[in-house]
Length: 267
Ligand code: NAP
Image (tube, rainbow, N blue to C red; front, side, top):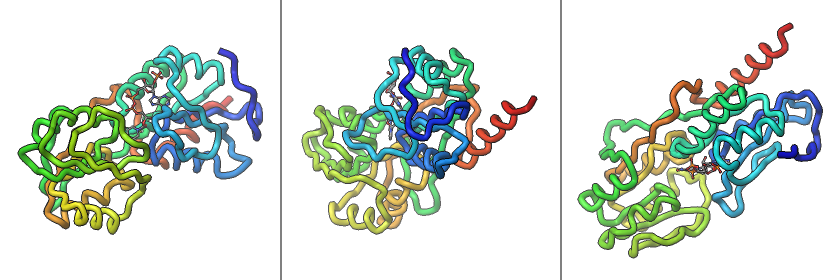
């Protein structure tokens, strides 16, 4: 695979960090690493291409799949990537396994940025499911006016539920199959606590369904549900690849990168 021509600001010899993105943290990391023109790093963020008009992070970007772990390993070699950061969403299971395999194939060090999951606090009424299908099975017993925040890609798991009314919020319109009683709100986050309070009240929501995405960007909906006494159905995270070093914060990635650079520079 031929390497792309060097972009503006290209300086040979700089370490090249590839961020597997699609999350707020990935964008923050790209911002931190590209804060000024003299950044010691060349930074490329990779996006899957699920959103039609994504908010692009600073630095270089590439969009679309690599063609599995071997394709990612090829890209890493062709573009002389020196460090790989898996900052994908906790539910982007396949990509995290691909990253682990590609790192092993290419010998490039990998760090996963895994934001901590959410835990219920006093006043929360949370129910848990192990998958979207499990959530769909539990749902009819828990509510009938449902704010479904598990993402437009997984709507097909709820398509057979003909009785409950669903509110779905997404950046791009969802594709079929979807549940028949569905209202779609096209909007891009982040959403404030006041936004979420107003939304739950306006639509008389009696159940919130969410993935255990973790992080602060989408947490206000949980606070709003607690305040309104609305139960929450939480889909647990899928397994992450074992043996991959990980951190819960952007600062943790920055420390890991500077430790690795210090190690590389040692005579
Ligand atoms: P996935 O099921 O783990 O990945 C499916 C395929 O999409 C991968 O095999 C890979 O294709 C491609 N892909 C995924 N992330 C990519 C990236 N950052 N750059 C290039 N290719 C990528 O992923 P997903 O759950 O569909 O999520 C897709 C993207 O949306 C991820 O980047 C994730 O961070 C973001 N996201 C996901 C969720 C969620 O709930 N799943 C929520 C918010 C944001 P190839 O095998 O061809 O390389």
